[in-house]
Amino acid sequence: MVAEELSIDRFFQFVNTRDLNMLEELLSEDAEFCFPKTQPVLGKKQIIRFFKILFRQYPELVFQVQRKNSPRR
Image (cartoon, rainbow, N blue to C red; front, side):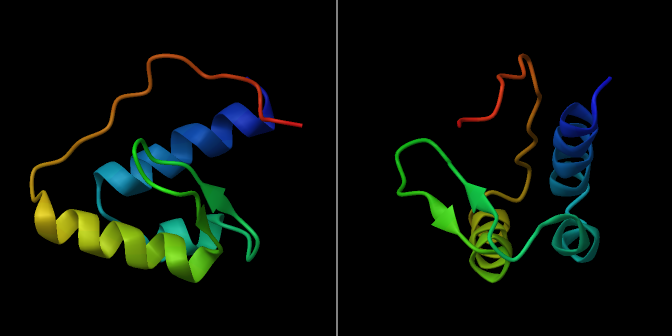
């Protein structure tokens, strides 16, 4: 497994356990998160804010990674 795949796995592990402290440690300041039907969420603080709002609206939401694509270049 390459480092990028490990980061993806850890990202969704922290999201699914709602561990926003660990998620924040994993993200870089210039991170970008793309979620369906939304504009890209830019920056660590905005991504954490996005998930706080998402978790309030969907208390039982769980993500499952089915396929990992190569990062955009």
